[in-house]
Image (cartoon, rainbow, N blue to C red; front, side, top):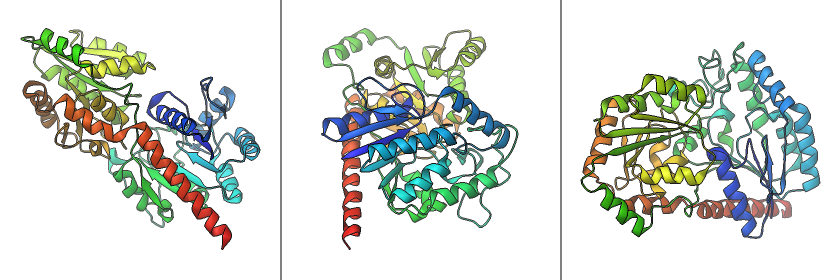
Length: 420
């Protein structure tokens, strides 16, 4: 089966890693995956191409800044990508994030409607069915729901990605997306969380069948210390009461809850250190100025998954204080390394947890968060084995196999319809 995977980037970030993992598993199974990334570089072993370029990306960003038209620039590179698709003649197209300033979505979906190629579209956020934002939980907005008016007067157009700084164009963008994204004959939506699936059912995308396939991770990379190393660590820690709290994000924007980790570093006992990974350089400088004691360690983003796995393994608890999210892979990575997870009850963040491997606390409740961290580190109610066992249900091979089953089902449906 020839499958084209489409995403903003490949390998970097959680979704980029998901796409790379899916490519590798499909390739091993004898399929013909093809990776189409919006920008960046593809690894040498991958068949594929980069859709956009720096000049086009800059123009699309400026178009959005001044006109609020994220997803409606990049017409030229989109037409070139469509010509590439016509050369490849894929059996199926699997879309991931199509926002990110590299596609003209009306051009792409107009072609998809004419091509009659089966499409799987994995939604990693809410951008496809809103007039602007990728998430709306933070402000409890419901204008995106199936209403006659749709999105309008967006309070986040300047404050949240994709940052339409000079114009609120949410009303027109909502209408254009609804027109473009509906009416594809053979399209199936996939969401990693039940929460997002429920959102889709309330949106204009509800005409499509929706499947829930949780994200998968590399369980060979993200794994606990081996037994000898763990015994040595336990021996070294005997009588030593230092505790490490870890937080990881690809981008620490307001909705990711960085302020809660800062508050934890100020409120936890002196034998605790909070490590925050994924900050940009200005954020690192800011954190170090605000927390000169060193009890909050600020680290920039890393593209090194081995380093990330090592940080998970050496933490006593992983804290994900996100206020808006879909199905964070960082939760899975921490569990796979044997580290318990604490997160807010928001979006699908808590769906990966059970009472045996972590805690879900009320959204925004700092006192509950602080109590959960202290209990987890001092009482140690969650074993390495229980955390790892939970994560083993989310292997990248398992996720890929579910996608292959879906590909086959969609292909079978197409063949059946053609025969009748």
